[in-house]
Amino acid sequence: MRGRVKNVGGATMTDRAQQAREHRERLRAAIENMEKTEVCLDIFDRAIDQAAQPVWSKDRPTVAGWYWWRADHSDTDIEMCQVSEDCSHAQFIAGEWELGRVGGGEWAGPLPLPREA
Image 1 (cartoon, helix red, strand yellow):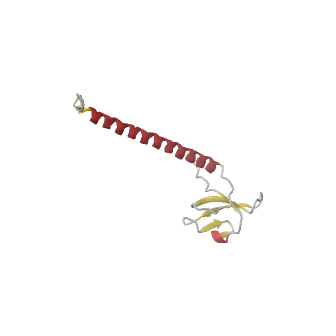
Image 2 (cartoon, one colour):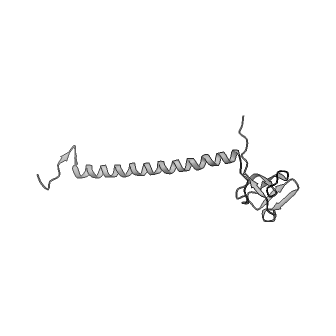
Image 3 (spheres, helix red, strand yellow):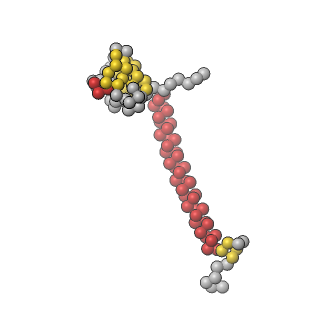
């Protein structure tokens, strides 16, 4: 019997061992994908929280949309503006400005659009 592989249900033991190894690798990959999905969901949840309550940042906008802008740490000099699709300009009430020419200040956004009722 030594050196021979027994045939079980149409497949050799070597075939079944290979199938088991492949199944184990698929399970390992699925678990890894689940862990990556959990990380992505955590990032997505934080983004939703931030969209609901934007945070002030000195970073200029990199995504088009509506933003709050304020002079550095001001509680009274706050404006809303719309940032262009290419993020090169911001339309304030007082006029349009190139983002590179908006001196200092802080940004919060993009602001989420309201949901339909």
